[in-house]
Length: 341
Image 1 (cartoon, rainbow, N blue to C red):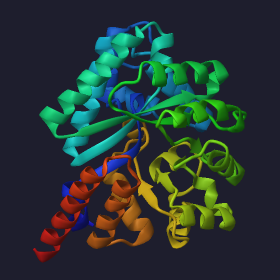
Image 2 (cartoon, rainbow, N blue to C red; image 1 turned 30 degrees about the vertical axis):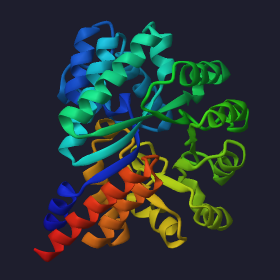
Image 3 (cartoon, helix red, strand yellow; image 1 turned 120 degrees about the vertical axis):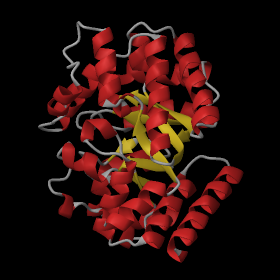
Image 4 (cartoon, rainbow, N blue to C red; image 1 turned 120 degrees about the horizontal axis):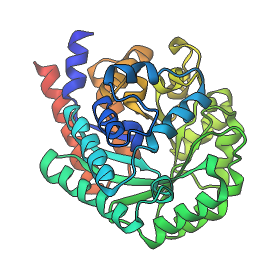
């Protein structure tokens, strides 16, 4: 695995399912916590490891929201965004679609114009200084209900930043049915945003069906339970609707009990376009390189197989065609050089 790990480390990659606040490294979380000492989040990076140990998905959401509460100023937003890109650059991530929940920040008092300016300033700096191309997915925090859906749609469509490409739905699935969000996805899609809701992570295949049929999903966040429904898998494969799979996250939140039980292979065997992602990497003690190593074990992949997996993310991305061609070419060239020795 040592050689394969080295290959993965240098492999050019795209990431499609990774959360803005959830990507804050322990160092950045500790810095934000020290800026806002009224928070219960530890300021010691070592203590954060214990803090980021989850009993179930509900506990994960509770901890996640406590970190969200640390992002209170435009300066916090800019720092977080740029540092996430820096961590991506270290992993040879060339392109990422970062899921951002603007409702949470604006509701906590950050001016919406200043928020957009902060993420855009960080995006442009990341591209010129780090070589990381960032795009945004604005997502509805499902636990906050239809008020948050209306506000997220307004922010996405009336304050639309240059880097925004898609519209999503995150947070808990249990007790948060997908159909109620259809009008907001209809509006976003009519304005050219792509549909990428979470579905089927902690609920059954019917949630994925709702996301596809009612929300017009072009990719599905997680989609873990789709593996229970052969008809659904066949539909996803036929329509080339990609699944954004996050194996370590699924174990950490108890969406899947054991890694060996993860349905990734069943998805691939069914012909579904699968991408591998890190979700909330520091919170789950992982990164995208590690998720590729996990996928290699679950799918028994060699270097060529991993190169194909990396190109899946490029295909499923909302990068322009010229960018897709360029990044896929980088992946092929790197893989061939490695194999040639």
